[in-house]
Amino acid sequence: MVAIAFLSMGCKHGSGELVDEKQAQVLEQYVNHTIAPTYTNLANSTEQLVNELKAFQSSHSQSDLNKVCETFLAARAWWEKSEAFLFGAASDFGIDPHIDSWPLDVDAFNNLMNSPNMLAALAGEDGDVVAGEQLGNALLGFHGIEYILFNNGQARDASEVTETQMVYAVAVAGDLRNRCFQLEVSWIGDAAAKTHRDKVEELELNSTVNGGSYSYGDNLKKAGNPGSTYASSVMGLMAIVDGCKTIADEVGTSKIGKPYNGEDPNYIESPYSQKSIDDFHDNILSIQNAYYGGIEGQRNDKLSLHAYVKKMDSKLDNEVEEAINTALDKISAMPRPFVNNYTNAKNAEAIEACQNLDDVLSKVNEALRTYED
Image (tube, rainbow, N blue to C red; front, side):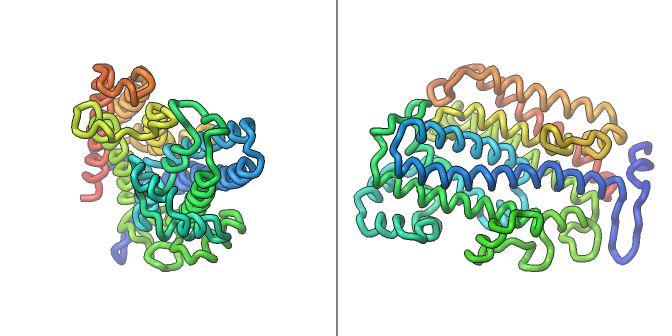
C-alpha cells in the first residue's frame, strides 16, 4: 500500500495517458546522462579509430598501431557500457548484430583476403558502405577489427599487418563508425554533432522511431504522452529495467555460460585482445549506470531509478545494489584471460551472480507492474 501511494503521486489521467512527474524526471535523467553521453563517446571514439587506422595505414609504425589499439579498446568499452539499453535503435535497426557478432568467420575472412575484386571495392572511397552492405555480420564490426589489431592479448607487431588487412580494417571501421553515428543520432537527434547527423542523412540510415518525428530519446522521455510508443511513464521505467535484465542474463547464460558449460567453447567474446572479462564487467557497469541515472560523473541520485526504487521499497533497492556489486566483484575475480580459463570453477560464481542480478531486477519490474495493473 505504501508503494502504491508513492507511485500514484503526480499522475495525470485522461485519453489513455498516464504520466507520473517523478517517473518522467527519472526517464529524462536516464536519457540525458546515461544514454546520451555513452553513445556520444562511442561515436567519437569510433570516428577517432577510423582516423588513426588511416594514419597507421600510411605510416605502418608500431607507435601508430599501439595508438589504434588503445582507441579500439576505449571504443569497445563504451559499446559494452551501452548494452543495458540495446532496446530501441540498436535492436530496431539491427545495429547490435551488425557491429558485435562473434566469433569472426575466419574462413570467410581468408577467402576475402584472396578476393581482389572485393578488396578493390573496399579500398574505394565508399569502402565503408561496401563493407556494410556486402560483407555480412560475421565479418563486420568490432571483432573483425580486433582480429587485425591484436594477437594473444597484445597489439600485433606492425610488420605482421598486411596492406590487404588494412584495407579491410579501414572499411569495416568506417562502417562501424557509421552505425555508431546512427545510434547517437537516433537517441539524441539534433544534439548530435552536425557532421555525424550529416553522415547519417547522407547514408539514408533510419534514425527516428517508426520513421516519425521522435528520436528514441524523446520517445522514452515522453512516455505516456501522445505520440510515444510507451503507453505510460511507468512502462518507460520498466523498459529500462528490462534492458538491464537482458544483459545480466546474457552475460551469465551466454557470454560466460556457453563456453563454461561446454555448450559452445568457441562462443568467446574478444578472444584476440583477451578482454572478455573487461567486456563482461563493462556490461554490468551499463546496468549500474542505468540504475544510478548516469555515467560516472553525471549522476543525480535524486533523479535516479535507484532513488525511485528506494522510496518505493528500500529493501528491494538494497538487494539491487548488492546484486550489482556482487556481479562486478565475481566477474573481476574470474581468472584472466577468459579464452584460456573459460572452464575455471570461479566462472560459475560469476554466472550465479549474474543470474541473481537478473532475478532481483525481475522483482523491480514486478513492483512497477503492480502499479501499472
